[in-house]
Amino acid sequence: MRAPIEAGWVVQGPRVAEFERRFAAFTGARHAVASTSCTTALHLVVAALGLAPGDEVVVPAFTWVSTANVVEYQGATPVFADIDLTTFNIEPVALEAAITERTVGIMPVHLFGLCAEMAPIREIAQRHGLWVLEDAACGFGASYRGDSAGTLGTAAAFSFHPRKSITTGEGGMVTTSDDALARKVAVLRDHGASRTDLSRHVGRAGFLLADYDDLGFNYRMTDLQGAMGCVQMDRAPWILEQRARVAASYDRLLAPLDWIRPPLVPDGNVHGWQSYVTLFAPDEPTLANVEELNHRRNAAMMRLEEQGIATRQGTHAPVGLGYYARKYDLRMERFPNALLADRLSLSLPLYPQLTDDDIGRVVAALREAVEGG
Ligand SMILES: *Cc1c(COP(=O)(O)O)cnc(C)c1O
Image (cartoon, rainbow, N blue to C red; front, side, top):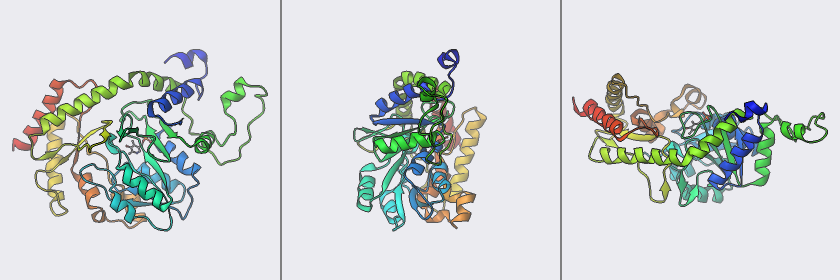
């Protein structure tokens, strides 16, 4: 971790390159290109794919807002599709219904560490001639039918924000097995430069600046973060194992409770367990009772907070957020499952050091908050 400081090379350099090599090997993708966040990683890919005004991209109605934002950055239009309430991921029939003659791509999200239903999604993409960009912000360690998140589409983007399974403070990574796309992403990350700072520094004629053929960005990860990423990769097997242990304990303790739905893991998936997100459902949730159930969930979360137990809603529904609701005149009721997930999801504490005693205490406090009256 101290190496970049001792060597004096702190911007993108050998540690980032090592982190990229290790990340590519971990996922099985041919290339990994680091950036400053998952949001900028997603932006680099859509820019490299030439996303432009007039184009449409289908995104889920329940996801972190930046999935849609990167489409907006290019002046293109995100078109929202509802999710499956049992997995919180985009629902393939709704996805296909959102496709028009202007659609150029699909951004399935592997929400909370569970891969989207990629077989039908890829089949739809192929039939309509669309690219597939996996928002794998939460997908570290996840796989679908034997293939890792990050290798399931045209390209993918991961996050190393502290809320995710491994972190570099802030940070992101593009993975792809498309050589030309990887090259373009790397160039756009570095102001559009045809040659990197480091290659100028260590090669000959470093006094000459590179050529700049493309409108690029400065989305470079620092070598300080690259060094941290390498250490996180050393710890990744342990981190993922512990996260799976915590999830299994929750599954066991929550199974007998009829008012909460533990996360479903469909056959063929390895869950990455970025989060353990349940659905609060003491009654069958509908658009008619959702606000009343939301108040009950929030009251339970408040009681847990009073005992020092932090819970969160899983994520939000961008279709209900000011910018999108106003710009596209969206009503959340058009996306009933995204609305229910926004109001009723309940994320429980999950980190590798959580002991079985801790987990027992969380579930006991939750039962007391909900069943205790
Ligand atoms: C966290 C997250 C992001 C954003 O990642 P950053 O690294 O913070 O930019 C994007 N999409 C999803 C689904 C996320 O969970």
